[in-house]
Amino acid sequence: MKTLEIMAMAAQRLSRYLKVFIVCSGLPYGNGESNDIFYEFFRSAWLSLHPDLASLPIVGPGNNRIPTIHINDLTQCIKHLYLNVPY
Image (cartoon, rainbow, N blue to C red; front, top):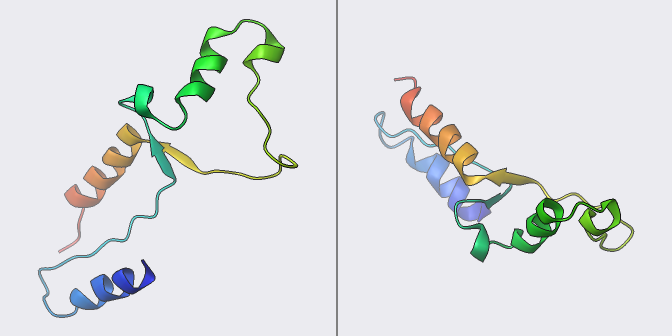
């Protein structure tokens, strides 16, 4: 992945009309939650009224963080980049 990033950044030096942006997003989710990796976690939190049942499972010591982003937010970010490219 790093090699592709370096190649993409180098390619923009070949043409003044080529603009390259590297977007490093979190793990995308949404618009198809039934097939999504987070579906069961969201489902248990949404459907349960009991606080113990609605809590999400803790993996390991519980100090890990997984960055996530909803697909709509990611597309808005990419749209903003596209529409605001300085020429």
